[in-house]
Length: 161
Image 1 (spheres, rainbow, N blue to C red):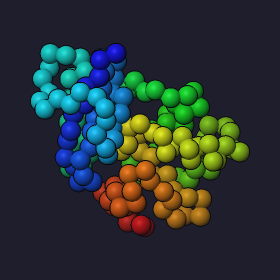
Image 2 (cartoon, rainbow, N blue to C red):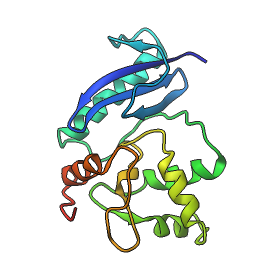
Image 3 (cartoon, one colour):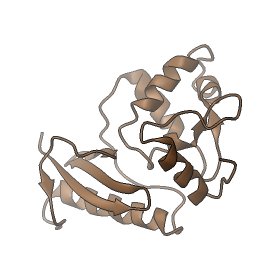
Image 4 (cartoon, rainbow, N blue to C red):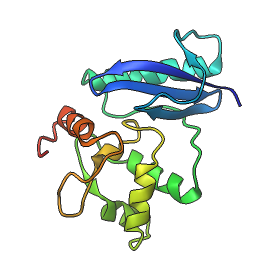
């Protein structure tokens, strides 16, 4: 499967978006081992997907987008994909706990597994794992770093952290 990667600048640093013809496969804080393209045309399906995703992420950072409409092609276990689908439903500006997500997927004892799946989310920001906090109300962790998580939550008007 052919994948391409595009580098974009954002309010939380450089982001690397990866897509195939089947959908967006990742958005990461670190460069991936995939061909990097400097310009996004409209001739290849994966370029169209990246161009759409970049545009929506730019709108998000500009404060004009609260929901994303992007085709995904995510690699993960069925449990991980179940968690990521639930994460995608967390509304802009709201936070939930790992325990909340475990309950929503009807597996209330899977709190730690939810945390692990959350940490393996391949599409940061768009699948808003930054909106998941600890059950005690503290900020919890974030694979991109707590400074980025705080910036994202502040951007969404959640100034608790």
